[in-house]
Image (cartoon, rainbow, N blue to C red):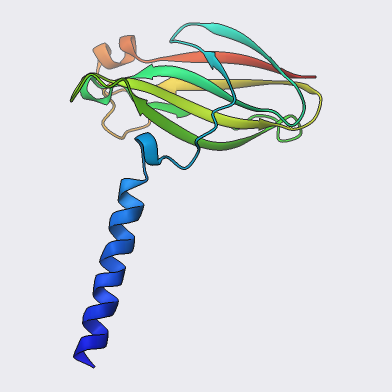
Length: 147
């Protein structure tokens, strides 16, 4: 019985390690980012894609300086569906940052607006706690048209 328990524990540990390693970078859940549209705080970007296409909304993110981008609200489900948030480091080492990609599938013809928000140094809170954090936080707006 002890041997079975040890084997089960080893298998569980292996599964947990594998799932932890696939959270970002080359082991991400999504390898195909599709058409990529880049945005930034204070920008409005128009995106045109065809029905059935995958597309990603990209923003520079560096958690080591306080960036934390999130999807403010899901788009009109008839037009596009949200898949996941993926992060790719820029390869510059610890603290150098990278890009977050919010991945979607274009569904039916129409338009929708997608807002991404960077809550700068919010520490997991939904709203900035300091004046500096309020000043540095912001949104990137994407106006998506599916043809």
